[in-house]
Image 1: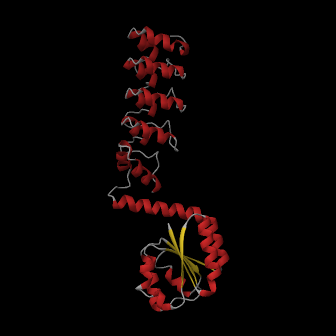
Image 2: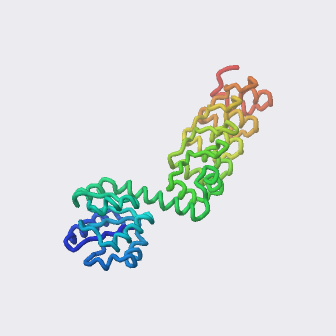
Image 3: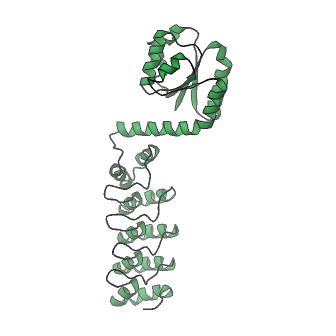
Length: 298
């Protein structure tokens, strides 16, 4: 976000005050003193503003005809302009995003109250352009490709553009599940530090993120999610729990991690079986001993 402050000589003090405001907020801003209309010719103005995203005009006088045309071009290209109210600003608003103010105090108050929102919107706009220029559609499926590959920079660009980490693919798979199924440990750790739903359920398998960890037989990811206090006893569409899956895989260490965290071995699935009864069926005394502390009869 780069700001240009265009001011007439009588507004030099206000121009300096505005520049100091942007400096305090760590925003890049440059001042441009307009002493004669020639300085705002169609040839000169676009060359001065092409590197800027926002502009404040401190001059009540409507620009000369040639300058008005140049400002129209600038607005049409997406420059966001804040100016004193005049007959020119009323017409210029039709060309693009321009906000007008009766006084400098009102203009400054608006910027003070909205500078963070303006910065976020500018960041979103830049991110959208970056995605467009790199050929990345703003869709959950495209987002998932980069989550799966742990392309962190592009993932962050999607987030900056407004995509949520709780977005799903067209198949209904949450991004956290995508990262887990790809066994991207670093990506999962990073996602868990963000605003992500730990217990979202995928539409394809009906699995929670924890169940996908167990399904992938990934002990490290299982430990990471358990430490985040996920729902240990969630059951899938076929009524199986993560612990039932772990017993089915015969993974004693996985069963221990879930059991130590308090997972119940007594959740019945669609076949009327539980982690406990499966362990008995498979004659896995070691698993029964691990789960015994949470077992309440059967």
